[in-house]
Image 1 (tube, rainbow, N blue to C red):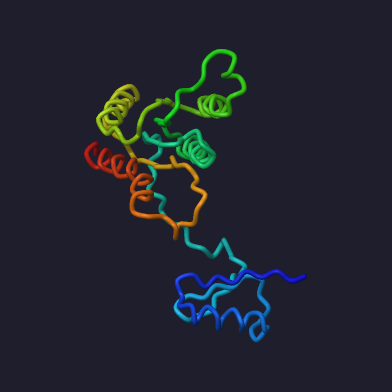
Image 2: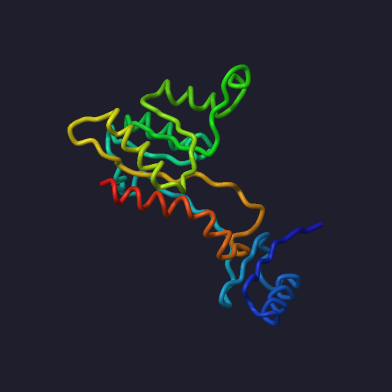
Length: 196
């Protein structure tokens, strides 16, 4: 049995039909994944990369900089936080929607375990709050920048890593659902530009 994926989203019904027939007839190479966009046939390909020939790019991060991470105890946020602590000796303000559990539940909570791991790597502070509340976010950032103050201390950057995985394609997003996802990011961007 042969399985293939042919994606012709956004193309006319007539074009989709022609391409599906072409793919079924095997007129093209029998690629397991095919996408049609603007009349062109696309297939994934892998190519070797010579990393030693790739120029190193400037990352733009500051050694010992203070960074705000929304969603810093989630899967992606945790990995970014570890990288910033290990590589840049950063100081991190982690913000999440839920408080960390206390008492007997704390020992088995993955967020508490991640937070403790990060604290072993460097300066980390966690705060439960609505990331879209600009005033509260500004207050915590100012408090922690002052706490970790050096002569020229300021917020070095923001990583907006919070989010809930939606069970739909980006093509199925509408204005309201996308706005709800980006709302905290817009607020954080305003905070970042006003704090510099």
